[in-house]
Image (cartoon, rainbow, N blue to C red; front, side):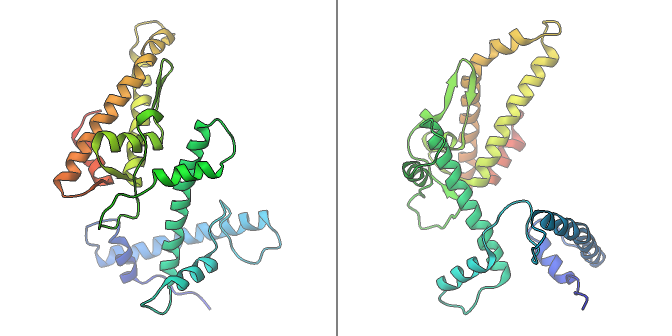
Length: 267
């Protein structure tokens, strides 16, 4: 039996999460075709990679990485529902994505705690620190992806060799400077912006330094300033993002606040 393609109305409903524009009927139908064509390309590739890892396997798997088990996650979710009778596949997928993101955040914070102790194994004390860093503020609002740092900005390392900003130290900086929590999406965007500033800075130095073909001395001369420059740069953006969040009545810095200040600030 040949599987039916997605319905145009279903594609329109899913598309509404990615654009605020309306889709014409022809565009909906074309999107159905394009997504099915992408599955034509993707599924044989996944099948080949799955069999290359386990020739005896009878079920298509994600060959890129291990994921939380679908059936086990569904059973765990069913155990926790009260007002409805079952859990649909979309809910299970959302639950897996959310839980894996939570796992990633736990491990990222715990790994940073272990690195500060200069050990290569995550111990219970490191996980305890991660939980403290991720503790949410007292609020009646539910913000599942809001994380709140504990401690100060001492995690920010500024030395003569340059600056290093970690997710944990950025969370601490946001709490101490902006007096707000920050969501994971906003955190990732700020760190990406931070990395781009360094890359642009080095490119600019290499392209414009008046030291012949070897601008090493010029690069080294500004390395000692990197810590101060990036800390001030990040403070400024956190404060502006917090002002934007406060202006719309929010209690945490979200992605839209970071995007807003990016659009109005020249790098």
